[in-house]
Structures are given as structure tokens and as C-alpha cells.
Length: 226
Image (cartoon, rainbow, N blue to C red; front, side, top):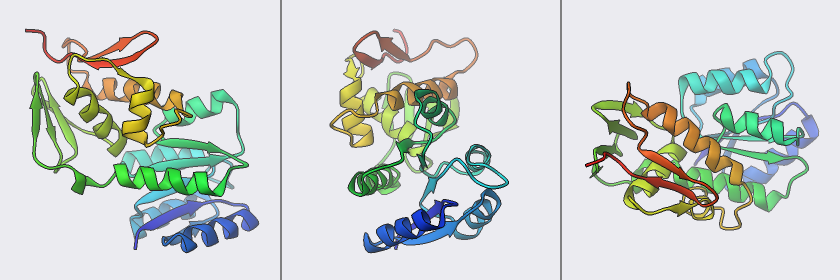
């Protein structure tokens, strides 16, 4: 049974979410503060974290930072902080998704399912080599300019889609559909900041950025120039 780590300090909402996830077939371990969340992260090694930001003691931002130092498991922020600046900060800090309260239960379950589906390494088979870059699914990594870097599940899937469409522009809407299972394109900012994180990880010395932004359209993988 897939284990979810729920980090929420509101007892009523926490109970409602535990019931929701349990009825959907998940095992749920819950924490109501940041320190307890990190202890459960170590002890239970969940498949996904649902994280509130306003927590007693260690807040959600600290939990996210420390989680990213340890693991690349999917993190979905579930927060009452609804401003664009907060959503941008969350995605830039390494969250894979950001859903504002109040929320629709079916939408929350759909987003969790999509993140888990994209984080499953069994869907990838064999190394893939294209224009100077090698994707290694067993380690969920990319080798660019001789340098190997580990990627999160979303980053790996994003790069895989771009590489397999080398030379062609993949629109933001297409990336949301293919990478995030979001055919309605409701989270366009996620693409921007996932590409930003990916570029930072692929940066090697003075080598050229293999990812090209096409203004108003999307992104293109160009690889090594011949």
C-alpha cells in the first residue's frame, strides 16, 4: 500500500484528509508539526508528502528545504496562502505542486495520483541517448557534458519529454499534459520553475544551455550544436 505523509496542524482538516486518503486506498502517516514530519520522513520513507506551510515550531518552508536535502520524493503543498508570490516561492523551493485551500477533494486526489504516477521509476526502460545527453532511468539521472546529476521525478520526466522531441517546440500546455497530467493547463507556473531547476542542475562550466525558451510558446531541447 502506498504511504503518504500528511503534514497538517489543523486537527479537523487533518482528520478529514486522513479519511479521504484512506478511503482512496492509501496508507497515511500524519504529523502536526515540522519536527514530527521529519522524524516520520526518516522512519517511514513515504512515497509522497502533502505539506501545509503554517506549522508550529519548524514551519513548512524549513520542512521542504530539509526534505529536499534528503530525498526527491514528490511534495504537494496544501496551503491557505493563496498569493502568486507564495505559489512561486513554493515551486521555486522544490515543491512539485501547490494547491490552495479551500480545495476540491477530487482535484487533490487527482494531483496526488498524477505525482505518484510520474515518480514511479518502473515506467522507464533502458538508457536513452540523444544529442550529447544520456538519460539513466535506473538512477533517475542525466549525463550532460560528462557530468551526471540526479533529478527529481518531475525533472526527469520533463527532460525526457523535451529530449524525445529534440528540435521541436513543446508548448507549456503540452508539458503540463505530458509531465504533470494537467490537460486543463491550470498550473502554468510549474513548468517555468521546473525548467529553471533543471537548467541549474545541467549547468556544467561554460557549456551551452541545452534547453531553449521559445517566448510565448514553450521550450525546446537543442542538445549539442554540431
